[in-house]
Amino acid sequence: MVLFRRLLGDVLRAQRMRRGMTLREVSAEARVSLGYISEIERGQKEASSELLASLCSALDLPLSVMLREVSDLVALEESLTSTTSSAEVVASAA
Image (cartoon, helix red, strand yellow):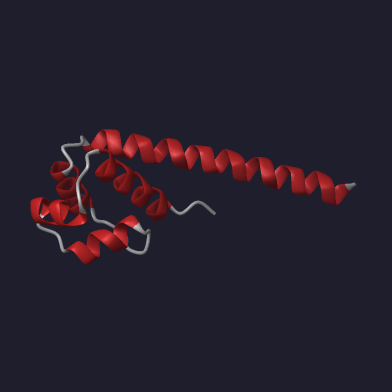
């Protein structure tokens, strides 16, 4: 099963690191606690649309770009999961 929050966290962390920002810098800019951002990046917490907008603003990243990256990763994981499931069905039928 694809976990959207995990992939979202992966994208947010990659974007933050690409920009050379620390959690502390993003936290101050977005006005969100450092611990909460860390939990989002680790896929442990769900982020509201308002929070995502604040984080994207702090990262100088359009929300649409971030969501597109997450969507691409979801599609990739779904295709890999679908391929694996199909292979398992074929193997069990043999």
